[in-house]
Image (tube, rainbow over all chains, first blue to last red; front, side, top):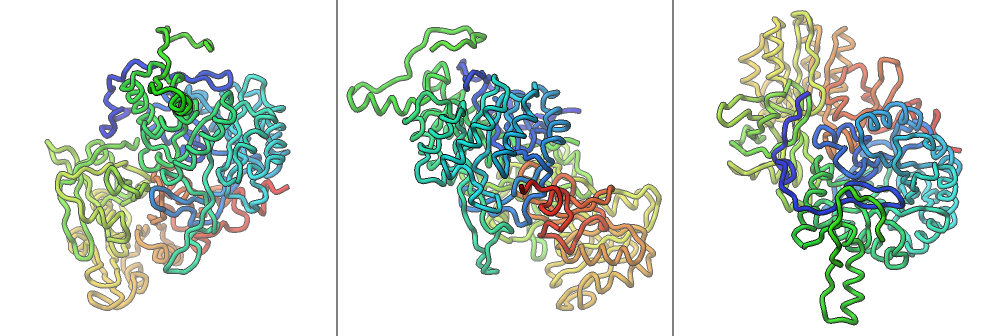
Length: 353
Length: 287
């Protein structure tokens, strides 16, 4: 099969990118790139592999999988909103067994890094999902989706309650392979996201993914009824980016040692950089994929270019930089720069803190 | 086939009745298009607040030599995306992804075929007609719309078929009524083995039903709302019965947009019918 070259993005023509170490460490796992796909926006990787080489990004984060096959919600499942969209897919998927046999196997054979997103209706379902994936060599990390808004009962959104979040995360952590980091995916629709984040970390989460969609409603003014078949839906896209950056900012500020994967409206390298500066060690590109199916690799290239332009030689030096800037500017008139680092051999992947 | 993403360039845009016909230079896309394929366009330019792709079935493609291949689409101004599209000018660039979806299945034998189009939904039927005729198939058209201005391609159809039946709801051209009012007579006359249809859901449902009554196969291209067009967003699903008899919510962008008329549960579109694979009634995790 011939892969025709796309000619739209600056990333497509083998650009000469500046020499920046883009690798990132997430709870013991090193990724060559900090940019991943966001769960629910990339299927299981196959479709996007037409548009860019999915092995070149940090990881493919798969659509949240449940134990059983799931039909999802009725249509309409989507409404376009200013700089975003509302969706109520309802976790449509083939169930864990078919996912492992068909989709995860394909991703492994393709050579992609895979973060598997799991979702359950009960704490026990998360445990059984973790057990199903425990021995799979294809799984780089787990992302525990405790925050999908498209469930029938809002009371089942574990991420709205610290105790429920902790219960799910503890079960998933205990039943996953010791070397596989477990990330808790949090909802921005909470009063105190730091409290939820802390509960997840205390329960054993190795890191946090922030944020999931925000709950919304669109009403069709012609029919005078809710537009979505599921009535409520999750708002995503650039419209929610400042909310997501705020969540990352607050949690990194409270727990700077906890690895964060940031997502919410990232559509450019500059958007991704905001999350990095706020404290994320990696980012995910989601809704923007619908606009530009090569967005993940484009964002990665733009981010690298942007870091190079600012003289940052290692992505990791920029993580949380906005906090340092603030701390310094309060005491020191000198503008803070990312600390200059000794030259590193590119294959040095050891922690060097 | 592999879909590609290219920066398309507007070669021309012109009004055709109530619609707009846009010709885009889209090298790599045009060469792969088969009848029934669609393209997904980004709208609103680089700073657009409208993120979702707009899907359009391909009217025709042409090899333009030095320009590269061009893709023509036909559209009506419905919302902000198509309004923006209606105001593009020559040399503007538009991000194009395509070709997408499953095209019309063609008969192996030279059987009579009737092609049914509602409004500008007829757009993909003309290249289909050409290919059917190359296979020796008899081709008849049935075109319908609310008004004469909202018909598309009547002259094209006349040029490439045995007969063209037209129905308009206001009677401004052809029979007063809908395509399904004139289709039974056409099917009786042409003894069509295959009916190809593209248009609104209600029309497709009625055509599929008529095809079944006349013992004909039907191939229906659906128009479902899509966010991405490439198979990752899961918004464009509809209930379709598989070869194993099981109903699944399938993506019209990758498993469609062309479906066998007898496989789609037309009356249940917009719902998740009871018994659907993975629906709460059977096997959904609800403990």
